[in-house]
Length: 211
Image (cartoon, rainbow, N blue to C red):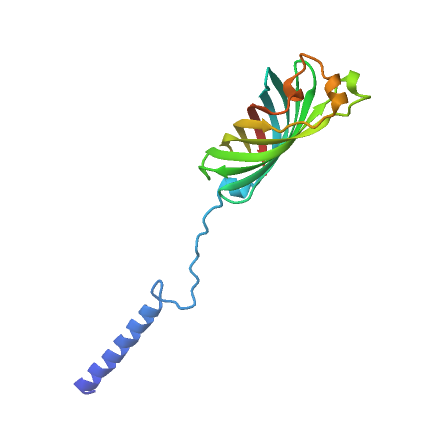
């Protein structure tokens, strides 16, 4: 075999070896599927629903006197996205004297530190305050409802399946509509829920189950 022919055969074999090696190299396969990692969903979005109980302290001031109420209730919330959340609460508050209060509140929350264990948020909302008549007033009065607005700041400490939190609200309660007969039944010393306009502050402590 001539020398030129031997060289040509050797070059052809070497070219084929390089092609096979290149095809087998990592990342050179056109049909290969490269796995892509998906970021984990933050806990506050993985478990958007929350339901739980809370303790409430409410202080209301009228034109001439103030009254402190204590009690508790239940709350539920739903996280819309990383910043916004809606919450609904029902509270039963006891007065030291006079009428107790039943309160329903709807709130919107704006989270200042989403995805963090310590979760600060702003809140604002509206509600209805129902004055529960005394036993001596049951026959003549079935109680009355008054509008309520509130705004404030909250802080929650989130764990995997539950959270604990506190909120501080400024509260305003609208005037109560009543007739002359109602005014005649009002007695001195009753809580300021008998006044026209009320303002005050509310502190709540809560524990919530997340799911």
